[in-house]
Image 1 (tube, one colour):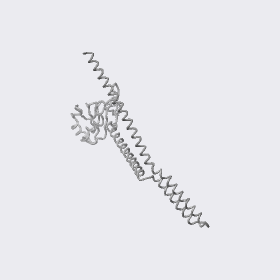
Image 2 (image 1 turned 60 degrees about the vertical axis):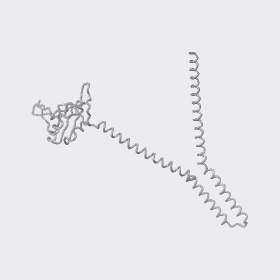
Image 3 (image 1 turned 90 degrees about the vertical axis):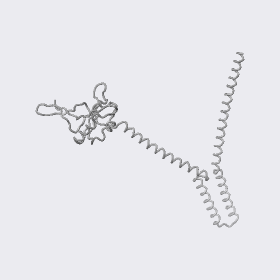
Length: 261
């Protein structure tokens, strides 16, 4: 069995088991251009699937790997010194001069997104949802303010349109009655009077619709008054109960004092 060093790869040992992939990468950052990173987990035993405190880092050039060893060796991470050395492979010499390369450690895993990155993604999604909620709230507020304005100015747009239609119909009927050439003037007068009466009736029927907003306001005020009265009654009942309790306590104290005397 022979050992051959890999010129571009570095082996990190004695790493605290609490350190995750993201934290280790942040500690290594700036030592050189990293091409590969292996975070080693245990394969068997009770600690299966847990971090073994070993990691392998592969750099672009041999010079960067040597500089990284100088920087990272005996570096403190979570109160523990890291040891950095060149990584090596075992070479098995078999018959026929063939060689097979196997790494010195058990199965390695490629780095995956850490918990902190997942949290950042969740925070971004929550912020986007909040922004959407704010936009919906603003839109609803604008709609509510528009409705208020309409109620304050008078009837809504649909009712105003109906009134305009009624007025147009009345004008057309009047023009027709005027243009119609009949022998008797009395009939023309009666038709015009009927048309005017119809217009007045339509206006009278629309008047109560104009006062709908006022009636709603009155109802709301009455409901508020009733609620206030109920609250006042409840308060009075509570006060009476408290007063009765106090009176009973005082009477009991007086009786006790009288017995002692």
